[in-house]
Image (cartoon, rainbow, N blue to C red; front, side, top):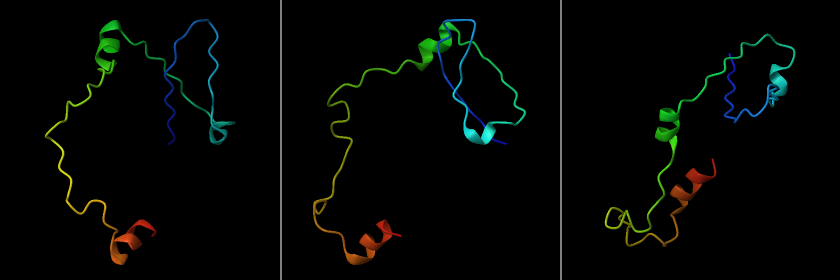
Length: 77
């Protein structure tokens, strides 16, 4: 079963949906869920504050050193 999730603001009685080619010609069920104001408030992302993670991140002293061949090979599998 394939799933397609589209978030949109409906501003007319006709809804145009981008449908993947793999779904064309197949039977589908379309469910429309209306988001409440309370749900919308929960989903609003808070603005990030620069420096808010200060002291929470540690970086190794050899961070900028080249990787050894074995470790480098893991990136190119």
